[in-house]
Length: 106
Ligand code: FES
Image 1 (cartoon, rainbow, N blue to C red):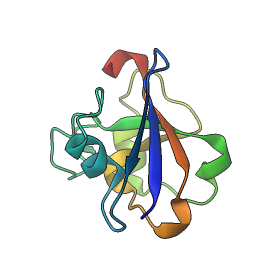
Image 2: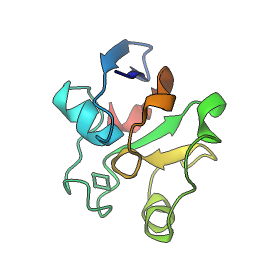
Image 3: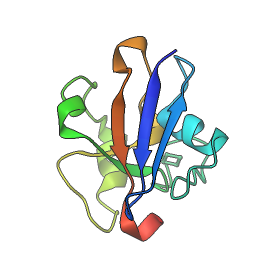
Image 4: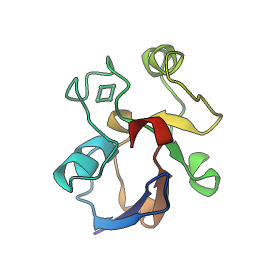
């Protein structure tokens, strides 16, 4: 089972087991990771699941869809590695991936 590490803006780290096929948002909510709310349930319409994927992992992900890119335009601190966690499905080859949470969602 792949492991994902979520790191809060204050450095608090959460390493969790993730079921393959679940989204990074679903996994974070299931493990009560602070800062990932997932208000829209994964419909790509709220951006409360914004996070920064570690640069070592970002190239392994499919690119942002048009709707994801549109929603990201509204976040407070958009970066090159900004993603919406509900749009990323965990696969076995993502074992060890690191995701950082924005300060304004903490
Ligand atoms: S949960 Fe709403 S955009 Fe990701």
